[in-house]
Structures are given as structure tokens and as C-alpha cells.
Length: 235
View 1 (cartoon, rainbow, N blue to C red):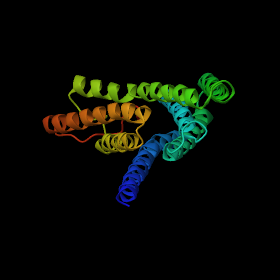
View 2 (view 1 turned 180 degrees about the vertical axis):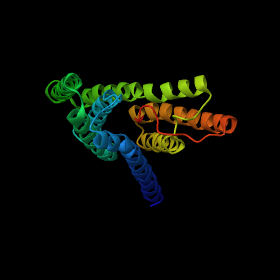
View 3 (view 1 turned 120 degrees about the vertical axis):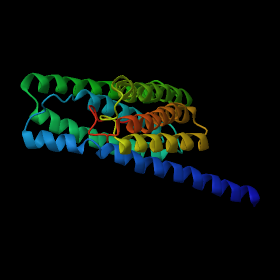
View 4 (view 1 turned 90 degrees about the vertical axis):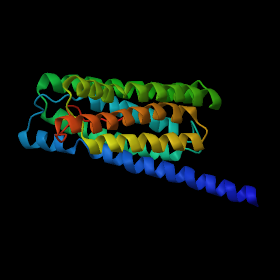
């Protein structure tokens, strides 16, 4: 009876961590909205880059696939958060492509096609070639590589803050949500005993802490508030 009770508590904490991660991730998904409102208002993509949204879409699709029961059972909250993320990225890319110049439009369509080909290839290899255990390992490593590649954005922002000694392009709310999301999914991965979840999100948690520490330090020095980031993305 005690074992069953502890198991229920354990499951409850695991579910709570996953739901919290979904909520904090949603905050990050909607963070580019001001950028795309500006693009729609000006009917131009100006100097904004669409590549972060291409990378984010590929990351969401791979992590979505990893969270599917056919690849790994028991982590459906990974699938839900990344399904929402994929939809957001597709909407953002549709807007970007609509208002981009012809050359940029064609290049972005090419990148979008490449993402589709890569994802279809991953699904084909997973289902057509690999057994369940090997499938889980294969997609798990891909998801880790994809998540780690997404750390380029916060690393760039951290470098920029140190170089300029200014938090102008590192919004506190975005950094705090990134930290909380990574922490939540780190906990979720630990509860699920899944290193493919807790290792990359653990790295994301550390980067989030670094961002918050830098914000605290440099905001006191410069006495300024942060503004819209140069590139709005997420870990």
C-alpha cells in the first residue's frame, strides 16, 4: 500500500513538472509575436532572419517524434509541447515567407522543404529499419543534438551582454521563462529516468541561470531595462 502511495506521489510530481514545462514553453512560443506584428504592419521582413524559426521547427518535430508512444512510451507531455511549438513555428514561417522578398522567399521555402525531407527520413528510419529499443536511442540522440544546437541563441545573447555590458537585448521575462521551462523538463526527465530529457534541459537550466545572473549584474551597472531581443528564440 505504501509503495502504491509513493508511486502515485511520484507520478503526480512527474506530471506536474511536465505540465509546468508546457506552460513555460508556451510563453516562449508566443514571445516572437511582437516581431511578426511588426512584419505584418510594415509588410516587410526588414532585417529579421527566418532561420531561427527553421531551426526551431526542426527541433520541435524531432522532439515531438521522440515523445510519441511509438518511439518512447510515458512521455506524452514532450509530444504535446512540441506539437504546439511546431504549429507556432509554421505560422511564423508562413507570415515570414508571405512578406519576404522573392529571393528570401525562395530560400526559406527551400529550407522548409529540407526540414520536411529530414523529418520524413527520420520517421522512415525509425519505423522501417529500427526495432523499438534502437529506435528510442536513435531518435533520443537526435533530439539531444537538436536541443543542444538551439543553445546557440542564448550563448550568442550571453556573449553580447558581456561584450556590450548591457542587458538591452536580453529581456528578463524571456530569460526567466527559459530557465523555468528547462528546469521543469529537467525534473520531468529525472522523474522519467530519461537522460535524453534531463541532460540537454539540464544544460538549458544552467544557461538560464547564467542569463539571470548576468541580467542581475549588468542591469544594476547600466541601470537600464531590457528591450526586444535581436533574435527571439527558445531553448
